[in-house]
Each structure stands twice: as structure tokens, then as C-alpha cells.
Image (cartoon, rainbow, N blue to C red; front, side, top):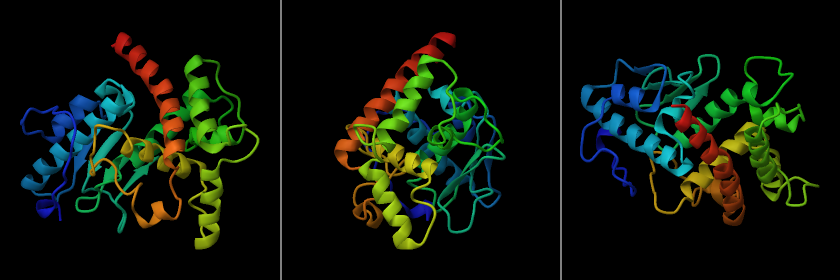
Length: 260
């Protein structure tokens, strides 16, 4: 339960001991709207606001992004303890463009769900000939849709290439092969979905970042049962993916910083 759970975080001090609220979260990270469930007490809301604030600040720090950009130009909303799905830590609802965290089970899923929100948001910015509102960039890349000409879009495509293809670009990466094997093992169509593979790769890179440990932002990519089954990229692969992520997000952050 939120009131009795301790999350040991190591990283920069962004708040200097100040108490945050979800209004601070909204204004600092540029969300269009923040909703807190009616069954969330004031004490729980204050605890959660600090956890979410630190987690989003860590994510912005790791990606070298201005904090305001995490709201995806105020197209993304955030819900806490409101509108969740039973038994689910967190989820991204593309129809509402809302990232929802469960009150008592949302810890560790924020990085994963942020990727889903970003993957959805950037699809129309990066690819042409897109049909449908709920497409993700990772799906469009795998479907070989044409990129809109822009240097940043080339760098985005490089993230997908490094993650999903072998180093010679001729075969699926070992990570993809393991995801396909997991789907066969569990009789599912989940692990090898492009957007899920990318979300797991993204959160794995965030958890492997040296200097920040934040189990509310991300957890389970090293020692969980799924990690032991190969559901995440290995450490060498994570490093290559992370380098591609930074090669994309760092100039994006610089451009947005100048624009701001």
C-alpha cells in the first residue's frame, strides 16, 4: 500500500525537501491535465506527487530533456488512482492520450508507459501516409512506412533499428528472437509486439543508467522472473540502444530549449 511502502531512490535532489502537489507535476512537466481519483486521500496524494515528480525529473535528466517536454506539448494527461484497469500497474490510453498510474500498484511502470505515450505521439510527426489515430511509430517503422524528411526522424529510426535488428541489419536482433520465443511459450501475442518491445527496451535502458536508481520510475528489468527469461535487452544491447536514445533526445531537447 502507498502509505506503508518505502521507495529507496538514489539521484539528484530536485525538490530540496519541498513538498510537491499534482499541480506542481502538471505545471513542471507540461501535462494538459492531471486527475487524482476520489478514493485517494490527501496524504496519499502528497506522497504520490513527490514520487511522480522525482520520477519524471529523473526521466528528463537521463534523456537530457527540458522537464516541460515530457507532457508532449501539452497533449498528454496524467491520472493517479483514477481510471485504471484492475490488476494493471499502469497503462496508456491512446484515445484519451492519458497515462494512468494505479494508486497502490503503479510503482515501476512509469518509464514503460511513458514510452507508449511517446511512441503514439511521435508517429504522425515522423511518418507519412499514416492511417488511423492510434498508430505507434514503432509499428510504422516495422511496416516500412516512409519517414518525413528530418534529421531527428532519421535518429528516431536508428533507435528502432538498433533495438529490433541485428548489427548487420540482416536479421531480427537476439532480443526480438527472445520476445518471439516468449510469445510461443505463453501462447500470447504480446512480448513481440513492436511497441511492447520498444517500451521494455526503453525502460531497461533507463534502469541501467548509472547514477540514478528509482524503483518508482522503473523496476524489474534486471532480476525479475521476466528478466531471467530474456524479456529485456542484455546489458551490451542496452548500451547501444541508450546511445541511440541519447543521440535522438539530446538534440531534441536542445531544439526545444531554444524554442522555449
